[in-house]
Image (cartoon, rainbow, N blue to C red; front, side, top):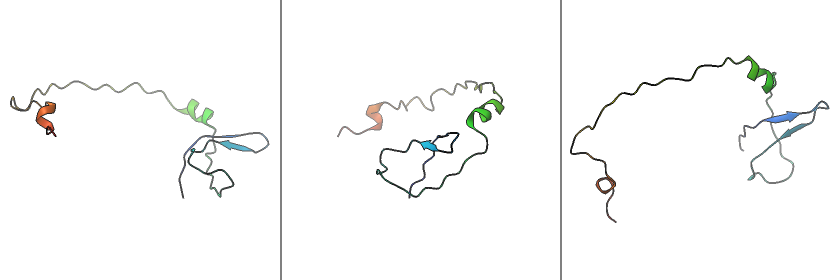
Length: 78
């Protein structure tokens, strides 16, 4: 059993179209559909725009002058 989260389109006559991953074999499958009562366009309008988060820089410098974290120091030569 797989859980797939995707966006589906529902037409006026009640047909639903959704994109599934390519690793699902072709044919009929038993599925469970949970539908949010508001379409995405209404949900997008109701969300307020938030200003971007601001992170201040905090200079920490080197922990120790002897620790350079060069590749040669981190990995063996083999």
